[in-house]
Length: 312
Image 1 (tube, rainbow, N blue to C red):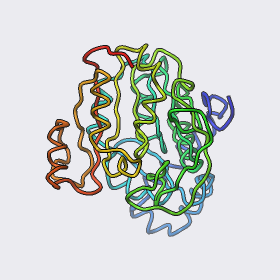
Image 2: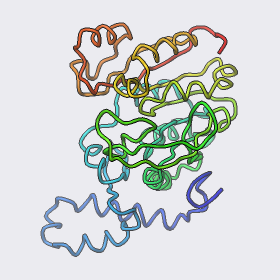
Image 3: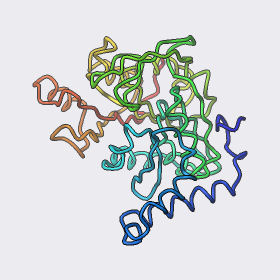
């Protein structure tokens, strides 16, 4: 277990964590206040000296009552848009103390932190994330919230074990194996890919998957998990445009999940469409897609609960 958090984060001193939280408390308390105007930049320099241990361009932001940091290209967006409220509510309804959960495509940990808080110290969360900028923020966010029950796995999940091109999108929220429909930086890096079956042992209670079009590949690499955990719940992002760049039809993902014995609901946290903030059926979304009524960049999360046990 190393000091980057690729296992429990106990090696990081509590004094460092207290100093981090104290600096952040000053930051939020003074920001925008009369004291801020009276003190000019002196307070900012003092606090920033401590917070500067973040990576270049990383920024703090709040999501509800939680403080996170993220690369600057997405931190502003996160600060203004609550993280997928329907998904968060669904996670609360599914996870219990002592559960084991997996966050595939953990990014900076917006879901990971919440999952870890829900399963508690007796539970376990495995956060799978391959990109270094996101990993840096993810590890710091876990330390900030003292979540020693989280194990960070710095690889990409897929159907097999190999080295693979990983395309950097226009922001750190859109990186993946395929060109993202919302834009690409043109940069390609190599990452290690491994099946989820090799990364996580049983039992597993819940898996969240958000991998920009490679969701079917992740499912292909978790046959043991699907077979030996009959009560397994899944949350799988459904992004028709990203699936298209991966050479898959939009219908392929929900139909595969239904064939695996899951009952599906669509959690529409996208904000690009009139259905925002609602729970819809797969058929309603497919009908809107066929009618051209969905925004080109629409996405939702498929909330999957088991109906029958089927062979994988």
